[in-house]
Amino acid sequence: MICTVAADMDNVVRAEDLSREFEKVIERVVGAIGSSFAAPTNDRMDDVARAECQVDACAKAYVAGRCERSLWLRVLDDYEKSWLSAASHVFRPDIPTAQSMAA
Image 1 (cartoon, one colour):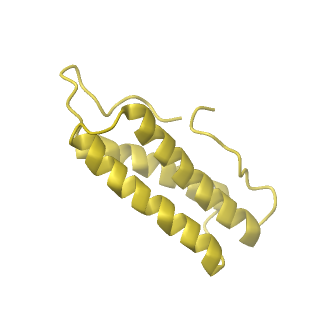
Image 2: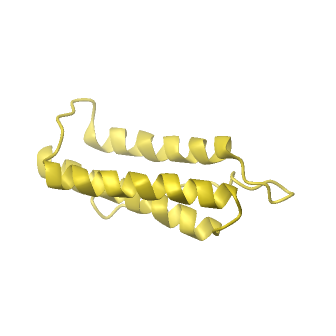
């Protein structure tokens, strides 16, 4: 689960904090798919690439004050789900594709 670390008492959003939250998502994905990695099919990786672009765009907007934290968390959740979905088709069927950061 993502902790609320991106905004301090002055409501300042720091890129470093968003980066730490993103790293936690990556850690969960790596934990779910394991250390042996072979790239999923191109169509699955296209979904991941689109989600990654959304993470980048949303992080910039959030730091600039143009979006809410709830959107940032939803974009991170979508990114995580895109990886888990792609990995579930390559590695093993027991990878949780419906995992949520709210869980």
